[in-house]
Image: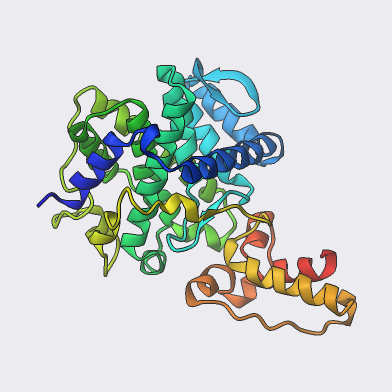
Amino acid sequence: MSSETTTLARFVAGLNFEDIPRDVIERTQFLIMDHVGIALRARYAADLNEAMNSALTGLGFKGGAASVIGDPQMYAPPAAAFYNGNLAHSLDFDDTHARGSIHPSAPILPAAFAAAEMTGADGRALVAGIIAGYETQIRISMALGPSDHYQQGFHPTATCGVFGAAAAAGRIFDLSPEQMESAFGLCGSQAAGSMQFLADGSWNKPFHTGYAAMSGLIAATLAQQGFTGAKKALEGERGGFLNAYAPHPNPAEVISELGERFETMEIGVKPYPSCRYGHAAIDALIGLRTAHQLDYEQIESVQVGLPRTGWNIVGDPESDKQNPTNYVEGQFSMPFVAAVALRDG
């Protein structure tokens, strides 16, 4: 019986546009438009742009074959993937998958765009690659058990995103199943992303998706050229990703109904540029404000119920969440976004 990693690699390598259900393709096209719009806005609004431009110039990454959304300058493909990945996640407005508790497009599309520009791939190959990336990242996150992964201090959008980015680029590069498995093996040595940014509102979060996009692209490119990566990168007992990064993984989740049930259909776009765990409360508060014609000055206190994982991200520690000092802390503060919802609607 084939391992989960091998089965996933075969699926990715063999995924053809013609075999993908029409509704999955249309959903992906919608998600691409959402992603591009968010990244375009971020190219002019995100605080990280000045530092990013200076760093990429200093590293010699400007001038190449790949584009950054909203930027006339061309970049080396890994740099374009890195910059686009940062932009996509910098406003925290990018799409999410509830069960996987991840942002799928931010690490995957930048790698896919760069790979497509490297190869001259057409739109069909691009869409197939993106869907391969979505299915890879989402299924790996569900197999981890994202709540446990968060509890250990990891950011699944990043740690699982590198596999999704490699899958997207690898499909566009037309890797063989063996090459794709090598790319996954290399991803296992690059899966990274700490939740420590919640302590001070730093810019690590968009860095995570940029790094995952770049690393996945590099892994797929190396595998294309014959560089071998470890087998059983997901389920291996000597440091396979699922066993190393989660206490109770379920590797079978990676390949459950693979090719029959497309988790891509469960990706949702965000109505608000803040952590998704606060959105239900925002909707409820806006609804109450409207229904009862409330003025925020009439409200003395608000009680919000959250799942444990959500509380750990947007509710704890209470003293910090009640006093955010920058926009990132505000995006991850349930008290702050609740107050904004009641004041501004």
